[in-house]
Length: 504
Ligand code: SF4
Image (cartoon, rainbow, N blue to C red):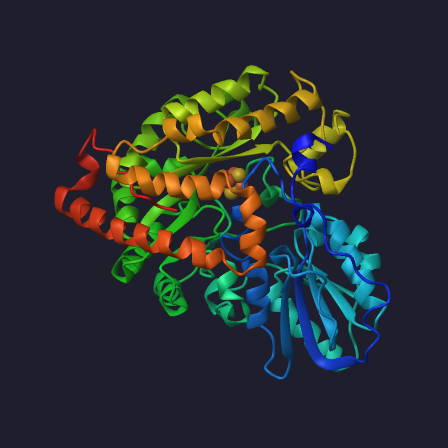
């Protein structure tokens, strides 16, 4: 354990203890509890990112729950201690992902020993069903929104099966809107996590979307339906959780048209090729987009080609970032480290590039071969996997032998990059060119990147929304002024005026 990890609040690193003596009460029929298990937070990155917005999985299952069932929601990452057991739920639905599979199994054991039926679902259940099966009364493999009501009906009828499967071919528009009323609103920056599309036009070899058996045909929801959902949650800011909101450009254009009248702000993940069409970038800005999360992955074309990512040449990335900035859209760049063409120079070169192009934020990920992906198969065939301790498959640890450095050097390079990115100097170097945007940018940056000690307090004392709220509202107002000007000027044609708003 390194020094940085030791100095962190334990609540961020370890799940609460499950008391072996607790929870002896009777099971309450028709009460279902949905649980998002604890995962340890990487002390190199921001703790704030874990409470930006809730996952959609549990609110979507909640929406699909028949009305005769009472429903509970428990997210262990809100640091409220041990999960509830009074009354003891008849059914406990637990999401299982690779990095918190162990915790999910621990929870499953604990509830099953007290009479609950445990249903496990999520990506890890799909990629490793054999590993999950001994911990569950039933596995939900595939689209949980279709499966959950079937499972509950079978529990009521006393005929619960061990395995339920559903594809993702259903009409996405028919899914019920997520039931956000179950969420503790004050615990997140915004509860409006939205999803408009499913799937991605790319199929990068390292991405979980390339998991064997995961057939995710590209699906789009009605833009008007998405806008109505945004409006009804009553929050000024939404986060689109789509893998790539820019996969289908005519669709994104239609969505922007539907969102524009709301006068709210939003951010989304897009691939950088969305900037092929500067007019579309402008429409995104006019519709309220203040930030994009872009998977650049690497600044080395050979790495991108080997990952089979269809993307523009890396030398053109800087110009494309400039185009987003001109339209008031902040850029959070995502970079993967440890590809076969990466060397020890990659770390410094990448951070230099981020600072030169003034990316407001960036996230780093150590290349991680997820089970079931082409990358995993290749690493396994080449004998380069170091172990199968899934806890460490969290993109913060090197779990394979890199080509041009040691695993330790890769981890050190990763930690060094975060240290540099969150330094006073780097934050200052990346400040917006428009002086009016500098103060809000600094406020956001310091809260997000340099307040890890504070985050535990904010999360545990219900202050997340209270702290972010005024900054978000100020950003929205600023954005509305900016976009008025953008609409009047023809915006994207104006070169050299980098009017970065204080987007989130
Ligand atoms: S572009 Fe992004 S979301 Fe799409 S397959 Fe590649 S990594 Fe996954």
